[in-house]
Image 1 (tube, rainbow, N blue to C red):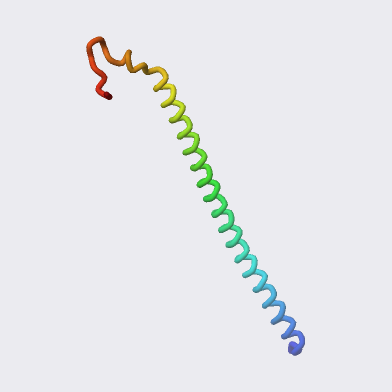
Image 2 (cartoon, rainbow, N blue to C red; image 1 turned 45 degrees about the vertical axis):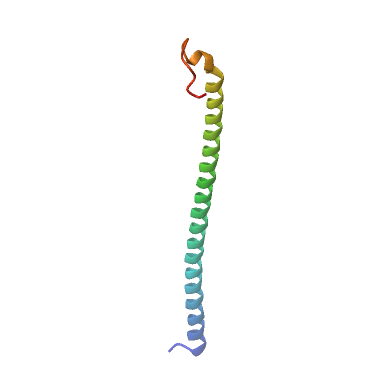
Length: 84
C-alpha cells in the first residue's frame, strides 16, 4: 500500500511535469510566432527598400532620357512641336 505522503508526492510530481510540458509547448508557439512576425517585418522592409531603389533608378533614367533628347532635334525641319 502506498502512503498518503507518497501519493501526494506523485501528484505534485505529475502536475509539475505536466505544467513544464505545457509551458514548453506554449513557449515554442510564442517563439515560432515571434520568428514569423520578424520574418514578415523584414520582408516588408526589404520590399520598401526595393521600391525606393527602383524609384531612384527610374528618376535617374528619366533624367538621362531628358538630357539626351533635344526638342529641336526631335522634329524635322518645317515640323512644329506638338507640345506647344
